[in-house]
Image 1 (cartoon, one colour):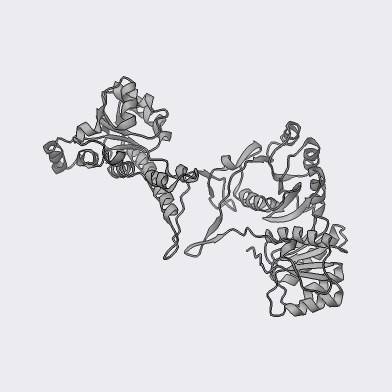
Image 2 (cartoon, one colour; image 1 turned 90 degrees about the horizontal axis):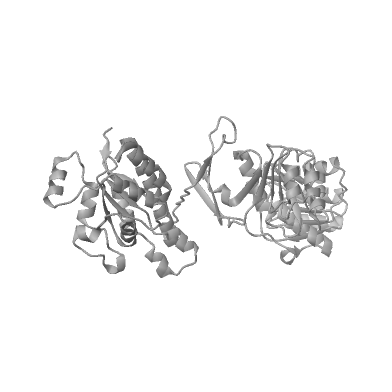
Length: 508
């Protein structure tokens, strides 16, 4: 099992030829015989290195427009032959098949072609057959064969060739095989997802190639890993690495801020907004967002949908926060915010986000569409004698956006495009309402003229009665309770407006 294998023959056929040249020269220095096809063969020959065409080995030309080039026993026999089996060695000799000790093959860019919006015909032609077969064959026979399935591994192989004079260890070959199977399984997953119509039954398949080991998970005794490309999503200007809990809050912050187009800042703790405001200028948005709950804002995640300037940065820098995200920062703002080395400052990049959400649960996985719906004034159906005015409709729309991104059961109070208070995650809606009232009063907010939004219907009229007594003038709820009329009657009795949307926004 620990035997070393000297590379004598190599098969090289790649789509991407970046940084391949040093390996070709190193194999040539070591006297390795190289077999190749098509463009790679031409590339090697142009380097002044001897190369044998695969069709000369197989005595068959490339046929069917290049669809069949390497699918031949003289190729796969040389890869799959077990060197420790006398019978395999005898058959190689009988059929004049060379032992192939190194395979460097990559795959047609299927995923990239799909993402480019190419035609179905072009996409189908990027489904690799020969390449995937060569990768699997070489990886299967890793005891005797080195497989390189990605240009990302070229430099590592080059170092091995130089340091070990063309020999490889079993551990090195097994590691390359592991990488190869990762590439092949990822490739097949993307092909399946392209064809998948979820019939007759949905199938769950995901494959993400990039990952980042986190300091720990939700708590220090838990391991944590992020699968994805954070560098594509954010440019970090300052601070330590994002933690598991940071990432959960950042995800919630991004989803919330994307509901707003005018200058807005939100502050989140444990995925819930403890402050959010929309204003004409971003500094005003920060001041009013912080006023919602300056106590909970301590150690929170802050996100803006407009550039942070020096004046805003100066105000933000007065409190302790974990993460600050914006689409841009002025140079002066960066200088101010970078004075404290651990605080994370991120520039958000325009990356398309997944349309599906999934998580492990029990002995499986649950998946759903993202909640991409939020109802505006046009979808608000007035069901009370008192009709909401235009200002109340605007505030109900604002409150409904916040409700959608707040843990159930939830109640949100808002006025003048500002969160005044929310009650979150309670086991009864009336408890959420009472929590919101207490918070609003503790930070000096007058609820007279404010509006209230609920993520789900009211099973009893007590919530609207308590809200009206606190000063709320308009209420938004999805409706759908068999006792809706009781709440409507209470609104009429108290002289406040109620609208229903028909859409529930549970967030568990």
